[in-house]
Amino acid sequence: MNYARFGLHRWPFRHTPDTDAYYPASSHEHALSRLEQLIQQEGGIGVVLGPPGIGKSILSRRLLENLEENIRPVLLTNSHFENRAALLKAILFDLGLPYEGKPEQDARLAVTENCLNAFREGGKTLIVVDEAQNLNPDLLEELRLLGNLEGRDGKAVQVILFALPEFHETLKSPKLVAFRQRLAVQVSLEPMSLEESADYLAHLVRCAGGNPDQFFGEDVLDILSSAGNGNPRVLNQVSSLALNLSDENGSDFIDAEAAIEAVTQLGLDPHTDQDNLIIPRVPTAIERETQLSEEEEEIESADSQFGPVAEKKTLPLPPKTIPFSVPSVSIVEEGPQTFVYGDDVSNSPEQIGPHRTWQSPTDRVG
Image (tube, rainbow, N blue to C red; front, side, top):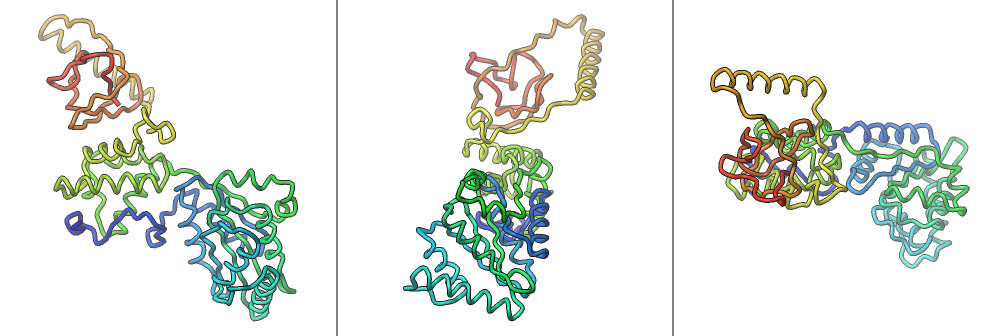
């Protein structure tokens, strides 16, 4: 792809943690602040929970980037350990120490000795485990014991875990009573709001050297933000596809047609994927009252020029999407915002598009 054609110097929607493009969403900033306080105050174990794609990995990297110089990070990204020996060897490997061929007790002594020596020299060790939902109670108990290492002046080792929400059920195990007693911070990452989602996408484009006002066409940020449901990974995926489709069409920006096509291809339509339901915007009472007043004025104006107008009928919403090729966005009266896949919508209640009429009960807007 010719990034320059879109005003970019690199790909904006990366699928790997990119701390250079970290977005300070409110939920992530709250969690980051709690973890930094935990480290400064030398508290117990920290746990961050969040669904897939919510940004746990990038938050863990952001945390490690902001550590003080005297804190040594140990980052375990693969948490599939067969036993305690495998866990201890992974820690030794990340510390740059010999690990091959060591039995469990030798590996434990090597980790303990190294961490205590570093502490005596003024350093501390922070063990961060990503995808910690894969750890069984036996491995969590080993981490708890490492977190107990301390000296006269404070803790030598601290432990922070990033995991999926189901990890909360693991913590209920009777074997983890002592572990739960060491929990000092437990926070959950929440989806971004629609406003944050739109600002997140604009932020990624700016980090890639682009201008969001020129990069996104009219209504595109609304379409992509609604489809992403506040999840950064989904927002990246649908935006990446929309950008590729725009490039294939020879465009130098993402238009609404490419955005809706990306949403459809990824199955993010609310009628096909309830887990990624597009959140509609319901008009306020004032907006509905204003809309009704404007319609009454239009009818009165038509009466004065052409005589009485036939009584307006409300057409029920059909159940399936009309596969039109050109997208448009419309507001359904007395209801939420709805994406209409098709031509420009006619004001006639029996007609959608200037040359298309409702054919059967299988037609619908989406």
